[in-house]
Image (tube, rainbow, N blue to C red; front, side, top):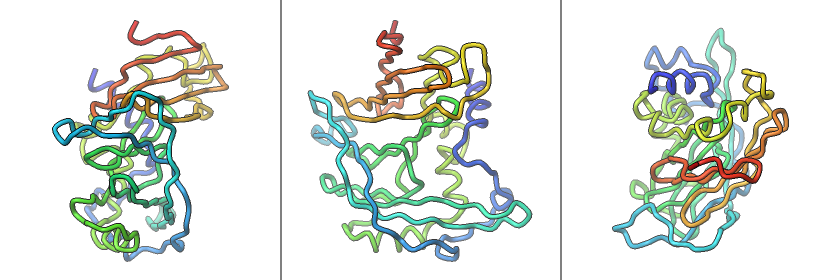
Length: 253
């Protein structure tokens, strides 16, 4: 079963290209790469009341919490890979007003503010949520100044680290811990082009995200297969705790 997960994960990684730089162990720092100017932007952050430190990473909230807007900055780094052409990385950074947690890393579909730090999640075309941790943590840089965050990020981070973050970790064991398989709880064709298709549908998308009783609730749809569903995920274990499809609970049964 683990081998099946790894094969599927390999098909749907967010990073489309495995670079020669990785195999050659070339560590090119981001400060040496071209990038667009850091622009002001906004992002949505899922946040809630947390318990005491002994219950780290848990939320204490009885009602649903929609994301809050946070001021952020964004840029795009460009990396030339010889005969493979040029690849680009969209990077976002912001600081939680509530916890002062830092996020800087690849752009995600949603972000969750936990006691341990901000966790990002992205829906891959194959029906997986690939989780990503911030590449600078507040315990390593106590600041509320985004300029200082960006400076540390560029000095400490190289291209290989970005690729590993996009893939969910530095090896297969870590990647499995940063993967939520939605295909296990919904029907087999939910993320394909239809009931009789095995082709991954590019139209499957994340409609919305919110916090409900400490769980990340995702609303999903795929017009190609007429799939509409909701998934509740524990952000600590990365496991699905409940799934509803077309108004009917399908997990747990």
